[in-house]
Image (cartoon, rainbow, N blue to C red; front, side, top):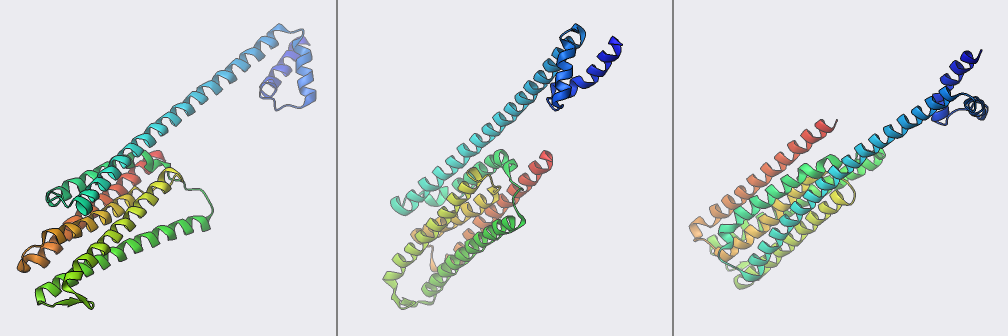
Amino acid sequence: MEKMKCAIVQDLIPSYVDEICSDATRECVEEHIKGCGECRQMIELCKNHVTSGKKIEQRELDGLKKIKRIGQFKGQICCGLALFLMVSFAMNVFVVGDASSDAMHTPVFIACLILILVSGAGYTKRTEMGGTQNGRKSAGGGILLLCVLSMVIGVYMLGLNVSVIKMIVDGKSDFWGMELLKVGPFLTKQVLVGYVIFMGFFLYDLFRIYRQGKDGNWLLCLHTTGCFLMLQFMIWMRRMDTIETLLPSVLCMTAFTLLFGVLGIAVSIVMGDYVKRRMN
């Protein structure tokens, strides 16, 4: 009879240890173990097993959090360095007007794209797929609007520069009702405004990534390309090739910048897709 009681109590021990049994069951088990050392020892073993399992699970969670923090820190450092290079180079172009800016444009641009791609490996896995369907559609619509605005600004600035070049090549003395001497300062202001807008987009991308946990390192590549496109137009205005090579030079420089930008965006998207598939 005593062995039968022990068998019944031992069947109840898991629910008793997990604290999911009824009060009557709990009282029955506690009454039994007062006089049964074997069942009491089994309860202690179960409690130790549960506690050790929780500790192992907690250590695993702590390890994952540590890896996540390291990835975020690496991403922040890389994006911070890219931002520093962009601002420093812009100061050199807009304020100092150093002649070496032309030669440094492409290396600095590539360095910024590489830093963004390296940082992307750290935070792409932070993409949040939760939220309502309307919320996800709204976020997707915001990103689409941002991309459209970026392309509109880029096309506008390229068209503006090409129009000024055609004015110079055709020997016209005015542009949109402005005298030739006023065209340079007007174009400079336009380029500066374009750069500030793209830099604002870049900072907004960083906010979305690190404060809202969104995926978007490809957007960082897009808006970095926009920033360096504006800087390239400014460099062209300072350099001014001969009239015969003016338009081909600007178009070639623009195509070269866009090529590296599109390559960076494509690599960033592939990296993001690869990380997501590995996480799943």
